[in-house]
Structures are given as structure tokens and as C-alpha cells.
Image: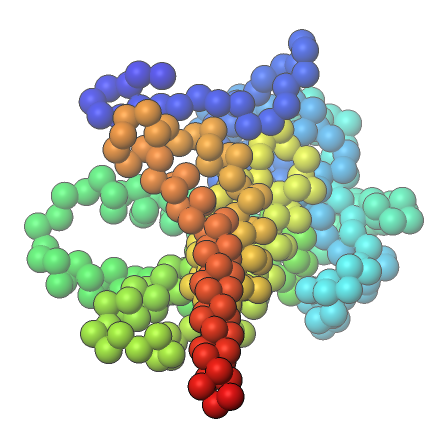
Amino acid sequence: VPSSGDTQIIQAVADTIQPNEEITLSYIGIFTYADGYTRRSRLYDTKHFICGCSRCTEEEDVASFLPCPSCHPRIMGQRYLEEDVQYDDNDDVHYAAPILRGEEKETTSTPSTFQLEQVKCTSCNEVTNGGTVLKLSQKAVDKITTHLLLKHITTKTALSSNTTTNKKQQEEESKEKSTIDAELEDNLQQMAISILGCKHWCANLLLLSMLERSVASFHSLLLLKSSSSSGNKDEDDGLDMTDIAEAIDSLQRLWTFTSNLKLHLHPSHLLCDVTIGVARTLVSLGDVKSQKYGADWVEKVERYVQLFQNDDDGGNGGMMIKVVDAIKNSWKRNDDDDDQKEGKTKEEHARKRLKTG
């Protein structure tokens, strides 16, 4: 689709559309992945209408899932979840969704009048009074929503502003702000996990932000190594394998979260950049096993990248496709190099035997 200036907008279908199926748009950016209450509130505040789509009025809102208050009682006066419940590493936690009353499903009720008092467990289907838990949860959601909104506004302002400060001062200010933001998000993430659990939308969007920082840090370390004048391939690149493992775990959780929402929206819409970032980090480790693992990850976003990248102009339009192809095939090149080295070694051993014979 032609646009103004040098900008080109590509419209493509990234999911299956059935005959006569309604095509919907989202006006709320990152909050598309939020719960119904937050989505409807954002739409009411910014677009001045109350959404009555099937997702906003469904009874089982996956994005709002909380560990069931009945199956998993809270500690410290019903404030915090047990640690094994918070992270659900064994996938054995029972989750409950807040119940919308009949009038709250209608488009005549403003979000500010919603009173979520009961939850329904998706495991035992028991309906319990979750008033105290829901009030505490909503306070946490409001704090995190405010942070995400401010972050979006700050990022947008930074991209559009023309500052007169020098580059060095900009870098120092940016570094200081990044440190403060990282500390704040770490605290918010801990609050989200301890109150809302790991499957709640707040925990996952904060996890995405933290993963983006980790990937940026990995790439900075790799750039420093590549610019080093030593040329020593065995030199420590500064990458921490524990950090990489945590990044992979975070990415897996995010793919699970977005897939469970069952949106007509490919998970790559949210996770393409971080998936490629993690895959590039794995490839940089140099061993075939890691590179194959990186190729597996990048295959998840390959089709999405192909849909939204234009390689017809001969410029940078197909750059992301080239990156994906390079990641996919890196292990093959490494494997071929190993085969060549092995062949040369065998040939040298054969020559030595002939000489000694």
C-alpha cells in the first residue's frame, strides 16, 4: 500500500480467515494482550465506546487468569501466592477467571462501574468469592497499566523529539534512565508474579520488556567482541549461559501465553523481534547444537517475516529475511566446516602413516 514519503505499508494476512468471518481491528496496541476489563477501559477512555465483541464479553478471559483462591490459598493475609504457585514450573496450578455479571457484558455499562467479585475455577468449575483477592489484584493491574502507558508515551516522545543536547550527554541520560526503568520493572514483575501469577497478562508483558533488555544486552556484548582487535575466537564473549537459559525460558513462556489467548493474530506480531534476538544469540555460541536450537526458534517467525518484508526494491526491504535465512542455515555451514576439518585431519594422518611405513 503506497504511503507518503519513503514509507511503505504492507498489508498481509498472517492467519487463516474463514469465508464470511468478520475481520476486526485493534486500537489499543500492546493492550490487545490485556484482560477484558483493561481493554474495554482503554477503548472507552481513548475511543469513547464500550466494546461488545465476543472476546471482551467472554466468560473465560484467559488473559486475566489467576491461581484459584480456593485451590491455592494465599499467605500473609491473602496477599501473596506460595512460591511454587507463582511460577507454576510443574504446570499443576489451577487457574480461575473473574466472572462478568450479566449487565457488565452489555455495551451500556461503563468499565468504571464493573464490580468483579467472583471467580470461576477452570479445573473444578467451582465459583468462589474472590473479592479480597480481586481487589488486591486490580490494584496491581492498575499500577502496571500506568507504567506501560507511561513507557509507551516516553518512548514515542523520545523518538519524535529533536533535542539539542550533545550525543555523549544523550547516551549518559539514556543509560541512567534504562537503569532506573530496569529496576522499576524488576520490582513490578515481582509484584505481578507474587500477586497475579505467571499466566496473567501483566506478568507476561513485563516479562517481554525484561526479555527485550536481555536480548539488547546480549547483542551489545557480541558487538564488543566482534569489534575487538584481538581476533581470538576462544576469548570470553561475556555471555552468561544462565542468562541465556533464562531468556529462552522467558521466550517459551511468552509463546505459550500468546498462543493460549487464541487470537486471530499470529504470536510473531508481538514476539518476532525477541525470537530472532534469542536465536541470533544461540547462533553466536558457535556450536552446532546451539545453532540448530536457534534455527528451530527462528522457524517460528519465518513465515511472518516473509509476509511483511519487501525484497523487491533491492534495498533494505529484505534485510530481515536475510537475517532469518542466515540463522536457519548457520548450523549447516558449521557442520560443513567440521566435516572439512575432519577430512583434512584424516588426510594428514594417512600421509603420516605412509611416511612412517
